[in-house]
Length: 101
Image (tube, rainbow, N blue to C red; front, side):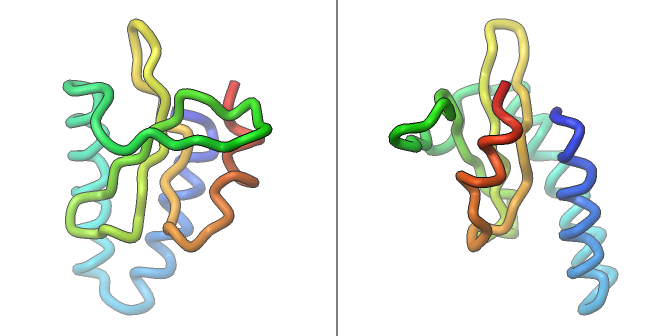
C-alpha cells in the first residue's frame, strides 16, 4: 500500500460520513475486504493503460457495493501494491503518476 492510500480512504470517509455514518462504516469494511480479496487473487479487475506514461501494470477493482470507488493496484511476484483508492471521476492518471514506483 502506498503511503497516500490512508489519506485516500480518509477523504472518502469524510465525504460519506457527512451523509451517513452507516454507509461510511460499510465502505471501510468493503474496502478492506476487497484488499484481502486482491491479495488472494492478484490480477482481478481491469487492466489500465496510460499512453505516453511510465504508468504500467496498473489494474482497477471496484470497492464492493461502491462501484464508483476503485482500487488501483499493481501486482509484483510476491505482493499486491495498492496505489490508490479513488472515486472514478477523479483525474486518476495525474494522481497515479506520483505513486507508481
